[in-house]
Image 1: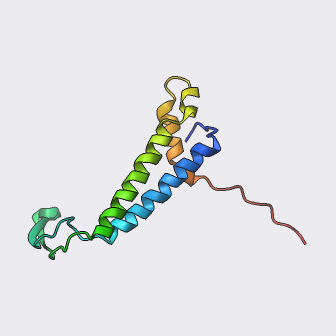
Image 2: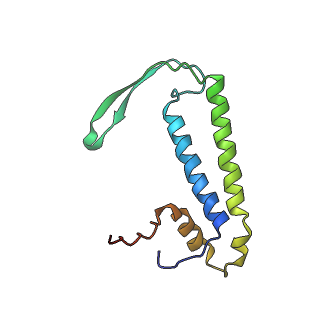
Image 3: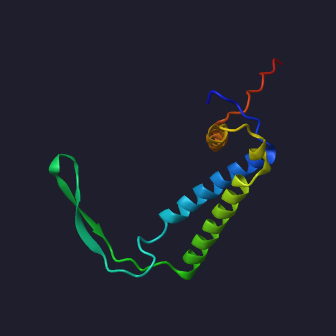
Length: 123
């Protein structure tokens, strides 16, 4: 980023929280069956480069359990609430016209910032 922004601590905290929740949600999704509802498995050919194909076999899906459905709803609700809180934060109104996209992009990378290294002590 060529421009540096002084994001308020609460906005930075919201962004870091949404990144944490999204990562947890993605991890949760990796544990789920491929279908929400019980479904019979399918077999099909996946196209590959060079006109080749490979067989793909998706086994029967037992569907989501009530606990998995509730966890999914909880994650989605948290993500929506955090998105709204970030979008509606009053700091955005302070930006000059035309700077919003760059600032939003920079905020999305707030987790990339590395803390300053502490000087080594010479004992």
